[in-house]
Amino acid sequence: MLQSLIMCETENSNIYSDFPWANIRIVLVETSHPGNIGAVARAMKNMQLESLYLVRPQQPPDRHSAARSSGATDVLNNAVICTTLAEAISDCRLVIAASARLRSIPWPTAGAAEAAHKLVENCQQAPVAMVFGREDRGLNNEELDHCHFMTRLPTNPDFSSLNIAAAVQVFSYEIHKSFLAAKEQHQSEARTETDKSTIFSDADSPASSQNLMNLFNHFEETLVQVHFMPEHRTRTLMRKLTRFFYKSQITEEEVSIFRGILTELQRLSTINNELKK
Image 1: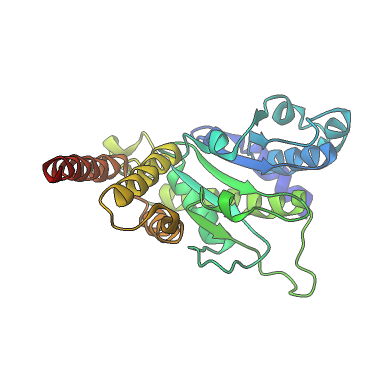
Image 2: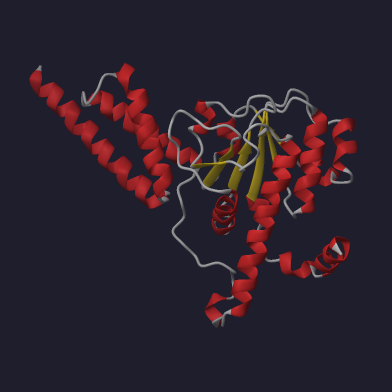
């Protein structure tokens, strides 16, 4: 029965043609075994995903990866290898971290289905990413700082660790399911001639990961310059501000507004310091 459903869906592959699958990025951080990379590629291709980014893999994709990919070699061959997570997601407008463990630091969270919906909704405008950490210890807090939301699967609390390919498979399925639900909803609604270019409504472009990091750095510089707090105490405050902006999903225009305000505050602070001399 399952096989027939898969065949039926595959035969109707034209429903996928107008969706930007390449904008949904799976990012693996410091993967330890090339076989796991191949298994991830297979999981991705099962669910129509094609953009794989590897951050400092301990071994690059090889013959073991190809064997475990079971034919998803196109995903492997097109994988992008990066030296930092920031590089891998620099142009992404939404970044969601998959984490098996709870954090002592509060962080915006979303369930698997909600996370998938956010990715499908936002990928129409720009690249988005789902980030998976190391097989043995996941993502560290500094890497989590680059992510808008964190998501985790409600697994057995006494045995919560998933193989990385299994985790990617579950989340890829949720992404695929969210796409099909959105497509079905769209097709069931009356469409106007001016709305035929996309299956989702347009929205202001969310700020890219790189521009958000530039904003956070600008905020920190300004807080120190205006003597709001000493440099060695900014880390906790900046983490709270980071969470606030990620939850708000501010746009590129809003980033420009905030940076304009910060620039003016810095200018006035400089003038004030000169007058005191």
